[in-house]
Image (tube, rainbow, N blue to C red; front, side, top):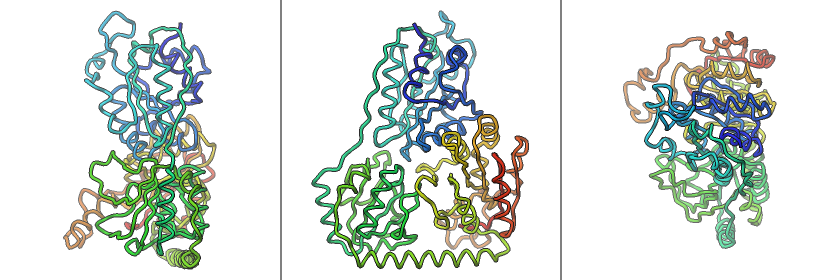
Length: 529
């Protein structure tokens, strides 16, 4: 006979879980007892805030491991919710375990014994996350644990991948039962229809000015390789060659492209391929996506003349289209020209008295590290390879990059640079991040693009009120910060800190910071992109 907690931890270990990022509470008493009894069970990485813990699990998943976070009942779930939504909208697999307040008032050692055990009970705890997870379930009997975990893994890792939410009351965690050793469930993904390949081939062959628009086609290596091979062989430009991840490397990558002049737009794994109020697309649209509907978005008007529900690799590996030689040569020239202009721009920015964000991005890119970007780093000014870059998830909940960076570093053993704004840095709960790196390892350099406030909020004022007084005076109450050396708090955890205000100091400061496992370089940058 084994406890529900023991069965759950053992099953996770058998499924390949080696670490659980945890913010424990009174609901995890049985888990702690079982871990003491058997140290071979998955390690508990205690992270003192849910935003950081969930983000670290997310980063662990991005490194190819199994990201698991354990949250304390309803308060922990509420704190982690933004990161869970990040995982859902960006289709990142994540196993979220949450305790549930004891449901009995007496009769068990697990029954309620604190005031919060009454006040933290929800009518429906799963409802809090239900819009933003693929599946939620409350385990009611210890005998259900193994089947529930199997279901978690099947749904989290089937396309579109994403987070799942599993609740376990304290009574169930202490309940004893016989293990059943249920075998795992197979995962699944959609496949392209032959008729869609025929239609896509015809549309591409008939087009004179096609373009590929993507955002996360580089989420998997086989996806990245298939898109690159297709774009290179046929000669079709790729817009957003670096989006949420690195989607493409090569001469077909373009920084800018006039979509209004394209007669065919091939949208690949991108929920928002353009901004309709700024760009009018007249050409035909092919969408290639594991779920091209994006049904979680209530109001959605992007066109789709051919919707292909398929993985990126299956679609492009089966699609055979003749080379477009004239277009290929034109795009190669455009690519060469844009690279030359960027190099010239960087040389000019080096001579300025203040630090432009593009120049800082250039120097960060030269480090050759894995980059977790939460704000102003501009990937167009860096040479990035597959798997080297992770940007804001679709939902855009701030604070994910610090935890994501350390989770990735722990999983991969690689040094990570986190680029974030001054506001995003504070959202990331720096002390919880410092604690995790210092206690459990990881190798992380944080570069703060300090522009004195929330640039996106100020830009929104300019967009909505182009002739307004706030824009004219460049005053944005509600979006402006007073400046402090916010990164200096790292010193209390033995880390390195440097404040940079001049372009000529950037490179040496970054090189010095690389000597440390935990370092913050706070750079005062212009309030622009």
